[in-house]
Amino acid sequence: MGKIKAFQLIKKGKVEGERGITGWVEIDEPVCSDHGAILRPVALASCTSEVHGIRTQFVETPMAIGHETVGEVIKTGSLVRHFKAGDRVVVTCNDVDPHNYQILERDPKFVLNPATLAGGRSWAERFVVNDADFNLAYVPDSVTSLQAVMVPDMMGTAFAGIKNAEIEIGDSVAIIGIGPVGLMAVAGSVLRGAGRIYAVGSRKVCVDLAYHYGATKVIDYHNGDIGKHILKENNGKPVDAVIIAGGSDPSVVGNAFKYVKAGGHIVNVAAFMDVSKDFVIKNTDFSFGCNDARVGGCAVANGRAWLERLLSLIETGRIDPTPLATHIFHGFDSLPDTLAAMEDKNEKLVKSVALMDE
Image (cartoon, rainbow, N blue to C red; front, side, top):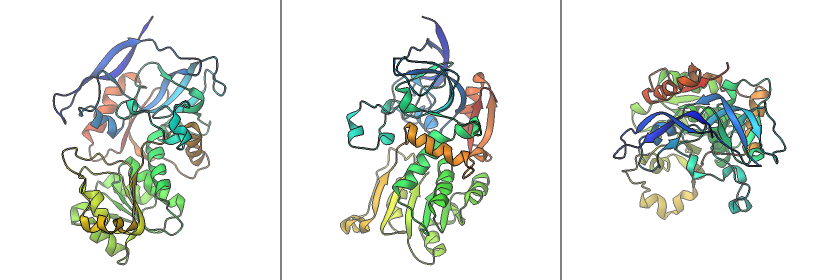
C-alpha cells in the first residue's frame, strides 16, 4: 500500500492548555468502502476548534485535522449513487451514519461522530468520506470554493443555532461573540426576519462585518455589563433570543437570563468555555423554571440535505460568506501557515483558508 502526506496533531501537550506538537506525517493511502468515496482537497479552512483541539487533553493522538472542506471526488464505492469522479463537493464536518439508531429519534443532520469534533480528516493529500451519498453535497458552478468552504461549519453551525432559537419576524436577538460563526448568526438572524440584532464584540474587522451582515448595534464588552447595554438598546425590554457564539467564561450563559425574555431562547453555538470553571445558573433563575427560557446548544449540523440548503442561499445571492476569509493561503504545503494564522488571531483576522486550485 502506498503512502500519502497529511498534517496532524502528532502528540498532545502534557497538561490542559499546553499546545501539542503538529506536523507532517506519512499515512496509508486511503481505501473506501462500497458506500464511501475518496477525495482530494480543493479548499480547506482552519477552525478555532482546531486551535483548542491541539491544546486539550480530551483527544487521542495522532489526531487528523480538517473538518471545513471542499473537495474533488477521485473515486467512489460501487454503491454510491449520486456522486462521481470529478465532482466538486462540500464535505460534512462529521459523517452522518445512516445506520445509527439515533437517526430514528433525531434529525440526521444533528447526529455526530465525536471523533471528528476537535480534529477532522481532510488535511491530507487524499481522504475518505464514509456513506458519501449522505455526507457530500454538490457545489453549484456559480458558487466559489472559497464561499463553499464556509458552509459546513461557519454557516452550518450558526444557521442551525438560529433555527434552534426559533427566531421569528421582528424578534430581538443578542449575539454574543462576532467571530465567523457569530457573524453568520447575524446574517442568519436577518434571513429569519429578526428586527433588532445586538452583536457583542470589539475587534474592528469583526465589528465592520457585523454591520455589513445586518447588526443594528454592536456592543463592546469592554464597556461593562453587556446585559445592561443590551437592555438599554432594546428600550428596557429583554430580547427574544440570545445566541452565544464566543467567550471562554461560563458565566456568559448564566448572565443571559438577565436579558432574555420569559419563554425566550438561549443557544450556545460556538463558545469554547474554560473547562476549569463551573457552569452556574443562579438559584433565583433556576427555581422559577428558568423564567421558562429554553436553554440549549447546537453542535455542528451535518448531512447532505442541510448542506444543499445552505449552498442554495449562496447560489441565489441571499448571503455571501466570502468576506469571512480575511487570510488566504495557496497550496497544500501552506496548511501550517493556515493553522498558525488562526492561532495568532491578529487584529485583521476572521478566518484563514488554504486554496489548492484557485
